[in-house]
Image (cartoon, rainbow, N blue to C red; front, side, top):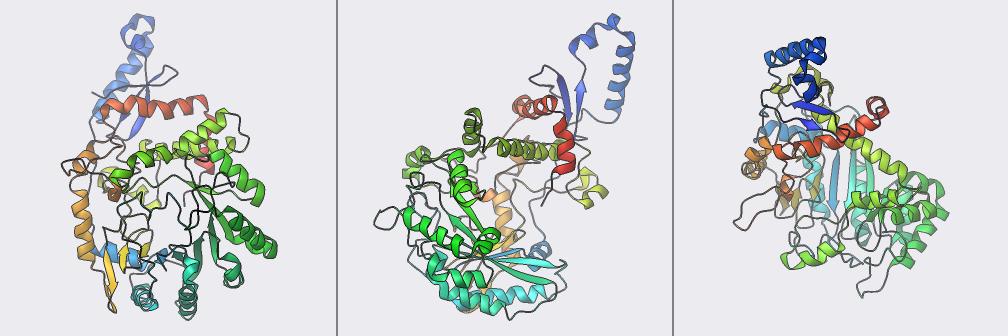
Length: 478
């Protein structure tokens, strides 16, 4: 029997996992008090018969796979979208919440190391061979080359060598674009080169001087004044470049808020910043209390700002809710499709993988200073998918397949029973382990949670029926 969902408005709905559809259910009175309306009773009787005949009340077990085909992994490499290179692990700041700082225990030790051009060239040449192969089926593919650190500008010599080398690479249908994440301390020294080579910048700043208190120099002194001055210098000297190529990234913590970050950067630089929470992956055991004190939820911060009448965040909050509704509808409305090929397959024929983990290399490939190849800069460095060392590359698709199989196996049965199996938001690399070393998922939702989860979104559509039209016609999926 399917558990009914009661919205905040008091209406009852039933969800079928078998056909992936939500229907408005008649109230209990309409079923019981048949003398009230004979026609209504006959209608619902026939509807119930129809639904049972079409397995509406059957429980759907998702068709989950835990093994990637090696050819799929190689195909993703051949159609890569982003190559991210850690050019140095040295940094001229010592930010309190840095993912490579003492709050975390899942990263390699930082030894002021610098990436070697030879290692980068070996990886690029390996990828070039795939980009030129029959496996590359992308059309007019733009590949983002990202420079990461530490502080990338500390090793500007390597960045110039990489850009110069890639400028000599000519592959039909492939264009390279460059982006760099920086704290802006060394920005004046290299800004002309960055402008000339059309490098896109993501500048890290957490808002005002008061908000920026965790972003300090090695000796503990604040960095805000010099960073702000350098950003203003770039904006004044290269206004067109600043408008088109510069964005901001801010970290939310206990010394700022989403409203403060947004309003400060919008007012001073006319930009809408990317705002991220503190990294919750790999926190050191003895630092969890300190982390919890510093951590602030982005969703809670937005709600607080809207409740306080923030004119800046009302539209952002509305858009955020719409995006969440769109994800919900894609997951639980049977007449929505994420891709055109989905139109030609029954849901029972589609294979899903546990959690929301990306297919290996479907988003990016990350090369560390230590020569480790990772699927993402956010993944702990205890999970390398390969290496570039001693003039050779070791990237075996069979070994990559086995690593993911090892990670998926302990959690797959739980995923099949989870309410969020279609729109999970956690990566398998982030899943914690309990005291016995067993993989656990802190976001698991079982049948007992169905009413709370579904009713929130259904109530939003009841209250704002116009959102359905807006989602169907305005939301664009990248």
